[in-house]
Image (cartoon, rainbow, N blue to C red):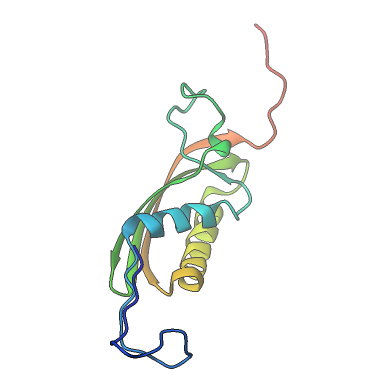
Length: 133
């Protein structure tokens, strides 16, 4: 929940620095981070099973699972996602981490102090034909 307050009698529509405080809920930061992750190639959502999916849809079609802990000006993130095979897991995780730090600062003004990433599955970027035995 974002709120901005100003003393009574002051116009909040001006460009002056006014006293007040903006508070972002953890859930708002989680959603912003999950959306930012969709901007990165070779990254998909967190599948619930490694081989196949019991819930329907492929892992890359769902969004990544993000949980955030927000303090006044900082945020710490825990991310669960999948990566397209044969992309580099370490390189892609580093790209995700750097992108989240930059984008969340742009979108929210928060400084991201920590991003823990768990890669839950690798998926084929382009599904091939099924083999019949």
